[in-house]
Length: 435
Image 1: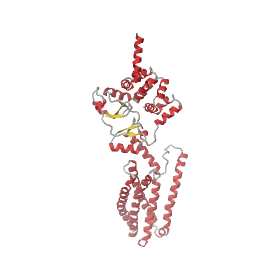
Image 2: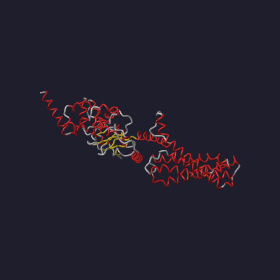
Image 3: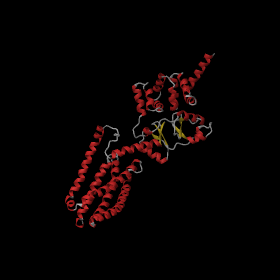
Image 4: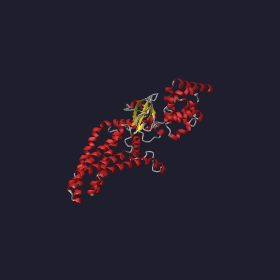
């Protein structure tokens, strides 16, 4: 009698999981993952495959944890690679390796490829360890899933259909205040925006800022939800990118670290140091053009660093603001007229103010009104030019498809030194009769 009853139950279970997988998933997702594993393990993978593929990844991976190694390998080998990758994504890199080791090398490499995304893509920034909930899930069941996941900082849950296509979202506050028997479809809200996993970081920033989101759902090519970009993760990535930009702006490789070998640092830095040396000789050649003027008026040599220093600082300020605007997508190359005019105006008015102070100091020091006038005019000219080039260099590099941070400060230093020296000494030569 008992054996007959057990056989009947087994037959009913197999009919459910084989012919009504969506109903089976709804029932199984309410059970403990160990019980899910025990039930599905009683049937051949050919009968349970559709259920495994439809289970939420967080439940599926915990059920796989309860299987034997052979059974776990059979599941991962049988389900679609994208579904297997979604399950493994619920574990960190180290946690995935024991499962990948159970598979053939080609199968493991395929899953690793799916789990990896280009460095600056939404897929690389996303957090794949999230909950996928069904519309008919109750608040009590959803809260139990949240507790089981043990993920801090969860603000939003996502509701999906049987194929993991997004249907809506639920704020954690709404979940906490709703009654235990309320179904998620009653409190879910529309999803405001989604992004493809291969979309570039710039597009992620645009959407997050446009919609003021803290969590941005990420979907694959089949529009299935595979992860979410957290705003805090994006900011961490932006900080890392900013530190890299600081290095590349001065000719240091983005791969170099504080504890890198000296030989690596020499190999990466030396070419840019030679370029910097060449630009220094160029600035020196400009000074050499006015050798006679400097020999006649030695005070010019004393004041050269003043002009070069002020124009250099002006250019660096314009460069920093423009670089930030490009990084945050506040400006595009089409905005170059506005950006250039703004920096030219800022350079002019700052130049007027600085020139007045400088002229007063030079007049008190040298007693020469002519020298004070010359340095005042050259200060305005050099600061205007420096501001324009500080904005132009990153915009120009962006327009031609190059990294705007790549050694831009070296180029800018060359421009500001050459223009500063040339304007000061050239104006001094023109008005040498007043010195």
